[in-house]
Image (cartoon, rainbow, N blue to C red; front, side):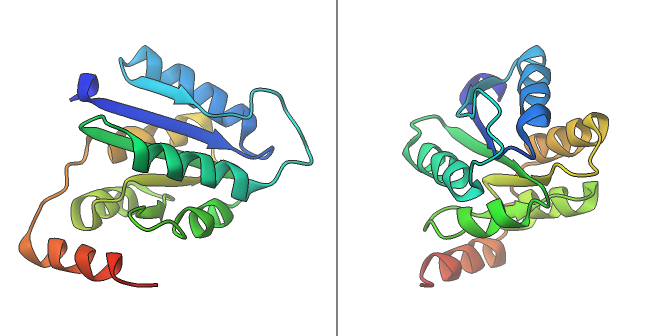
Length: 152
């Protein structure tokens, strides 16, 4: 599945360093990673721009599996911004159960991580759990996703 998956990463200044470490980690595990930036630390950048870049990339991707990972201080801001895009199902990842459920039940295609207080080891664990959890595809889950896509 790694060869059929593109993983798009972006962050604001709070998640800049963790994003870079996570990108290197994922490449080392064989994932095709597209780092959408920033490529230089800018303490004045804004998280909605990072969310927009990842949302657009995930939605436009021709890969069989397109996934996005966003980081900001709390993870909340990028999650709210990414979910403004129809077809994006962004979820806040804070423990293994939450990321597993987001993929299994809701077919989340964007993972939002809280960079403040999250160790590299924990970010790696959450990301791998999320990437390697398949969508269960139950009819009730598909029905709910269709309902979400009709909102707003």
